[in-house]
Image 1 (cartoon, rainbow, N blue to C red):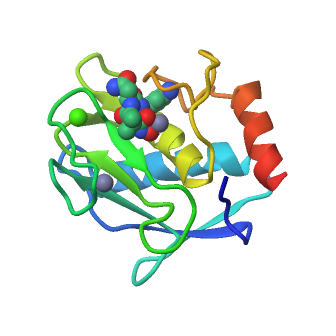
Image 2: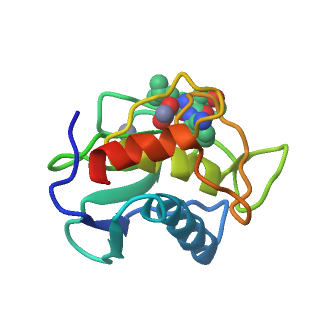
Length: 160
Ligand SMILES: CC(C)C[C@H](C(=O)NO)C(=O)N[C@@H](CC(N)=O)C(=O)NCc1cccc(N)c1
Ligand SMILES: [Ca+2]
Ligand SMILES: [Zn+2]
Ligand SMILES: [Zn+2]
C-alpha cells in the first residue's frame, strides 16, 4: 500500500460547492484533516496556488478521470491513494446536497471528507461496521467524534 514519504502533507481546495459558504467548506475540511493528525504524527498545510499533495474538488458526472460520478445518491465521493499528480486528490460529487451540519436531506461534508482523507493517506475500506473507513455513509458529529480503534490502528501502521 502506498503512503506519503513526508509526514507534512500539503492540501489545496481547487473547486468549492454552491451548497455551502467557502468558510463552511474550509472548516469542514480542516476538521476532517484534524481527525487524522490527532491520531498520527501528520501535519497538514494549506496552499492556495500551484501543486499540493491533496487537492479537493467538487465535480459532477464525467470530470476527467476514469471514475465519472453518478448524479444524486450512490457514490458520494472518491479519493486517490498517495502518489504524484492525482494521487491523494479527493473529488466530491457536486450532484449531492452538501451540508455543514447534520441533515436528513443531504450529506454532511465533514463526515464524507474524513472518510475520503483516510483513502488519501493510504487506507482502504474496513470490514468493521464501526470504522470510519467502512464503505457506508453514517453521519458523525465533528464536535464529539473520536476516531474508532480500527482506523487508529490503520493510520498508526502507516505513519505511527
Ligand atoms: C466504490 C467507491 C467509489 C464508493 C465511494 C467511496 O467509498 N469513496 O471513498 C462512496 O461514495 N461510497 C459511499 C457509499 C454510500 N453511498 O453509502 C459512501 O458513503 N462513502 C463515503 C463515506 C462517508 C462517511 C463514512 C463512510 N463510512 C463512508
Ligand atoms: Ca452521486
Ligand atoms: Zn474523480
Ligand atoms: Zn471509501
